Image 1 (cartoon, helix red, strand yellow):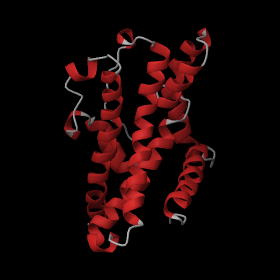
Image 2 (tube, rainbow, N blue to C red):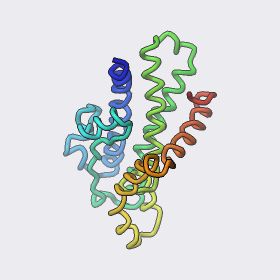
Image 3 (spheres, rainbow, N blue to C red):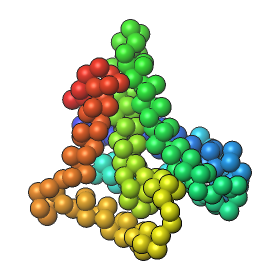
Length: 206
């Protein structure tokens, strides 16, 4: 029963955070001349259009999952490297803006009037948005951070060869706590989210 209640608390923030993230990629790409996301029906704030069923299930069960990536075609861009940089950065930036807005509400004197249920979901949205932002900024394929890195660096053959191992690297990072007792991914997220919470909320999250 406790697991079911906690799942319900997380569902709305999950839907909101991943929808904003994916919509932002598509919206920026559209503004830069790429209609691919719009033609695919992904330029939408309807979470159903962005949810991957398997990714959502894993996100709920093991707190690691994914949404359906918004399709982007760089051939439509006037300046592919610059525009891919902007499109890739749009997702993490949208998560930061979501966390910032949630922090403003939580620091408002009106926050207690929202009640415990809305308050808890807003707090979860705040943390989840920061987690999504910092995780996606990792320079590992196919995450946004990798696309940002590719956009600012001179293209090289090793980059294209490295992309093949992206999912394997993420999988190994997730297995390290069980294989070696090391958890660099969680250490990184704890550190970044903790200090971001300190800055935005004025206190460390618990």
